[in-house]
Image (cartoon, rainbow, N blue to C red; front, side, top):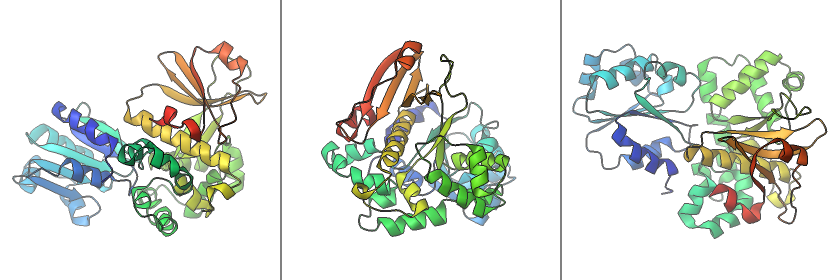
Amino acid sequence: MITRILKQTILQDLSLNKAIIILGPRQVGKTTLLNNLLAEEKNLLVLNGDEPDIRELLSNVTSTQLQSLFGNAKTIVIDEAQLIPNIGISLKLITDYIKDIKLFVTGSSSIDLANKINEPLTGRKLEYSIFPISFKEMVNHHGLIKEKRFLPIRLIYGYYPEIVTSPGNETILLKNLAGSYLYKDILSFGEIKKPMVLDKLLKALALQIGSEVSYNELSNLVGADKETIERYIDLLEKAFIVFRLNGLNRNVRNEIKKGKKIFFYDNGIRNALIGNYQPFELRTDKGALWENFIISERIKLLSYTGFYGHYYFWRTKQQQEIDFIEEQDGKFSAFEFKINPKKQAHFSKTFTNAYNIDVMKTISPANIEDFLL
């Protein structure tokens, strides 16, 4: 069992007597985490929103009906809650009228779950995001030396639990994961009118990691209008497939004003989309793979450790650039990523003169632990 960082966080927060909401993509380990958390629970009831009869039971229901449904159960798990109509009202009834119940809710997409639960559960919930297994979790599991040896494999196949625990079967499992599960919640939400456009868009984004993206260029490339591109990217973010990194622009006249990069939460999904599983040493996209990996791993770590600041990349019209910047309490930390440990970044004086810099560091596989532990 690979222990997830969120386990201890949630255990510490249980005393606050709030509904526990866990969001994350399918197959990322939400159910396994809850099984691990609740292994000692005696009066446990698990309700899965994937099942039609459960969706019907939990839609348009009264508090009396809920009490009857729960019986003597003291701990309730509602899995894949985003599929249940009016789930926000049902959860509010549980938290308001059924006392001494520990309530856990999972969702594999925040596409509309957030809209359904935010207002009804204001002040009644604690929300957590869980991602594919992280570098830090694997280091905790079997040590830093072993995990650093696995880096060439992680850069190609990623960190989904099924991939990590099934060495030798990564390619076939990733194909299934990227095909069967990737689009399920997006398509079921009904916002995607052209699945082929979504497929083309994902492949285009996969080929552009590490580069600034233009919605106009993507529109021409995949054959859809700019508004559709923006809407689909927003849905992909809410389904935990990609995330945006915006350009920092505040103090320098020639900073790129509306720059954005789009990264994947998992390298394996990215490589599955373009059908390229070549070993890392043979790749022509080593730099892009390293940048996607290191930034996505840092985002996981920041999420799990309660980071409350902002993160960006930085670029000027003269092509001065910094890969990753964190801002917290008015101070900035700047990081450059190099796959070759012998290369050291030269940080732009334009940037260092304009911002209150706390940390400047080059991150390579040789010192990855400085950034991800």
